[in-house]
Amino acid sequence: MSKDYYDILGVKKGASAEEVKRAYRKLAHQHHPDKKGGDEKKFKEINEAYQILGDEQKRTQYDRFGHAFSGQGPGEGFEGFDFGQGFGADLGDIFEDFLGGLGGFSARGGQWRRAKRGSDISLGIDISFRESVFGGRRSVVIEKSKKCEICKGLGAEPGSSLKKCQTCGGTGTVRETRRSLFGSFTALSECTLCRGRGEAPEKICRHCRGSGVLKKSETIDIDIPAGIRDGEAIKFTGLGEEVAKGQAGDLYVRIRVLPHHAFRREGLDILTDLYLPVSSMLLGGEEIIETLEGKILVCVPELSKSGDFLRLRGKGVPKMRGSRGDLLIRLFQKLPKKLSHQAKKLLSDLEKEGL
Image (cartoon, rainbow, N blue to C red; front, side):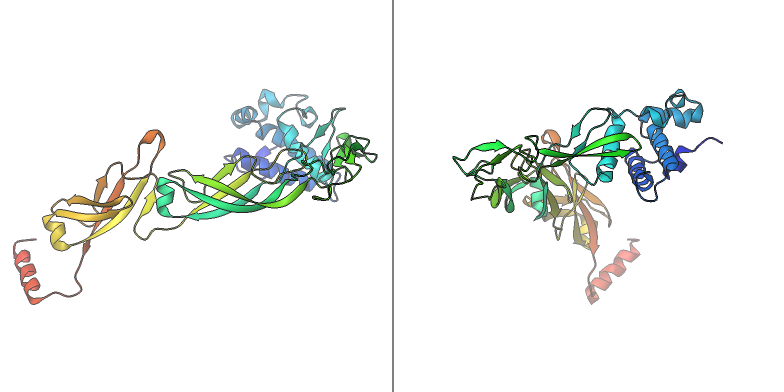
């Protein structure tokens, strides 16, 4: 019986690429033969399934022709993986977890090392409904690691020379070789003495104690774009944690839009409700309403019904190329809590008129 690759990965036929990838990584970690309770046969089967379902072209052919399609011919099973292409990143994640999260590995005589990078910073801010529509500007203070201004991240006391690290031989890393199903892998971890720089100062910086970084507070101005939605995040490249040698992380500012007592958003339109007496709904007329841009005069058509909308074009949320959505005003009848004798008589007369 032919294998069902969807069944092997435990996903439905219509699963997204991200769902397939997530299922593969979970099962690959679980069944890796070098882990306790691992299963080599199952591991190969999982990888064979992902080789097909993880490739858009092969998956389309598999969905149409099953195992008869050419992508599953001889030599294209588990042994056909190429570490230099699409599957390399996924297998690399597995190897990194298998090797204890060390700095990198080499495969087939080549060497791969993860570039050192500062951690990302994530924070949230609350903005008003008006700011979410028209944009605004905020300043936030964050505490993060920054390069030492005294030693410029070198970790050495000014005037002190650097010398080749004796622990790592100037490479910045120490090696550990292990064997696995795929052959021998050289795991690289950062040298703890020179902190990956390959050089150690003769005299460490007294300001940062040789780390090259210090915790500092920094004020960052945030420009809030017009039309931003609740839950969206603004990315600031390079404003995350800094490292002594390498690229700084990023800053992510997640937006929470506070609810407004009168307005709400649907797409690019702004909605509000207007309650009017029965007479105004029947006879129509002009009404002054409050908007995010001040008070405006609107015309209510006669014989309006509850649930009808008035549309003010170009008064909604800004969109690309300068245009905007609309302001929608939903009409409701405002009924009195008590009727006077005269009002009852008028309603009785209206009833006789068939109104």
